[in-house]
Length: 423
Ligand SMILES: *Cc1c(COP(=O)(O)O)cnc(C)c1O
Image 1 (spheres, rainbow, N blue to C red):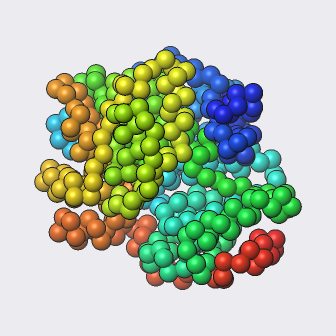
Image 2: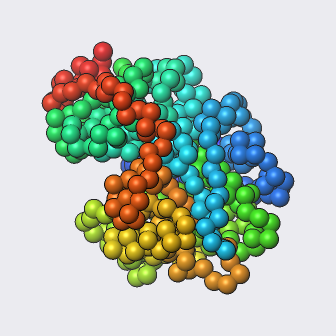
């Protein structure tokens, strides 16, 4: 598999390099040089998730990269992605049955396995800052992976108790540090580390961030899985609605369509951080200040995967005007959660926005799928308050609630962190 840098097409790398590097020159994103159509979609749809995913990804990777793809997938995809019928023509794709109850488990776990496979025994240190959720996905994805250490910084006292329990109780190769400061302090420290060439070399620093191509490839797989679970008489005119923040998830869906999965249309669903819906309506790219919302994982006003979406439309000869889109504020989100609950389905804010905008977009004779990116229990406080429910804590959370937090703790002091990383 060859990939080029969208900002400088002369920079071409293979899959292993793209996974290790993350970004290209000038912070440019890597993009596949060739997207081959899959010829045997009907056969693929009969397979189980892991078997099918191997075929789909082999089509991207070619024959000479990631020799142990099947092992990587077996270790990464250890949980299902059920498609749940919500009403006559509408289905929820539940992507939250992994260890941290969010779809990021798919990309994170695949990336962890792929990175180990391509690192050829070199020691790697993952350093990342989190305001809560990404840290958990990274910690669980890399937990127990030999040759890779993980250090996660988070602002002390500024993440929920449950969030802290979820990723600061693992131990082993996962070190967590509560920084006496803000999320911005944590991010500034991470940035310093990546500017320190000596340190970078010494500990094999890597960011494992959301821009890594391996995450997108992993996510392509569950669009096929969704389609495979549809009853055959519902497969004709499929519309998929994706709750979008950094636009990685929808990029993966569009890649699935590019290699032949017959999805008729995508709906871009955002909250009040609606840079892309406004852009598609007006042709003007005008990011505003990010505003906090109920669907906080989508509080992004400069979505970092958007250049990949545009690149894909360009190389496929598709028109951006084929994208449906919509944005919802918090009041509309609450109202939609109540309407969805009346249909018998408990949704959290992200997936519910996708459901509601899907309903606005769906025509007669079409089948809609909306992506449920997190478990309602992850947003228990809001969900219970809006719906008047008392939803149970899933096992993944409940089982960690009594464990001891193992985090270290220090001030946002670069020298202290540097010594800590060098140890
Ligand atoms: C990260 C996230 C999203 C947004 O996904 P992108 O790939 O960044 O568009 C949506 N919902 C939840 C729950 C998330 O954690």
